Image 1: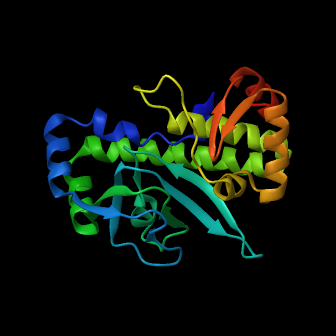
Image 2: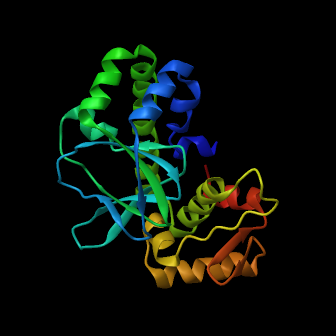
Length: 225
């Protein structure tokens, strides 16, 4: 069920024919980004698309009160920034690395050339874009219709999915409290109270900024999705 709230662009490279994948990887240019370093800013013109090789990136907008609303957290293996290129419009949001990251860049010219040359790439990108719109609609509905407690529970489950790896027996969410509050659409003080309640109810455990989910079934019930 958590797939309703996560993009699926990680499947693009996996599902591409080997020849198409090799060409796409060959035209990617890698760049290292430090934690808190911007990748692109809302309102600027796109010059290409991005592929996250390692690390994590947040996608957010600033509301009328100047507060940050995190829309999504990108994980390794995901493409981003391509919707603005396809629509020939400015970026509709801002992206910033929340961990030290390696991000590949594909110029607009190379991107358009691959779209024209590879029907598989075009089809997978369109499929991913369609799913992305559904995810954003689901996330916006959550923000507008759910209580803070429900939103925090849901975002903890989303983040658990983002932070788990095949190597880990235990998954620790290490997102900062301010970023978690911005994901849930609340303030730090309210988030702290909700996390304290969850800890008292033995739904989570904390160690500094690390959060471990102890009862995902009950959190899913609280999230009400």
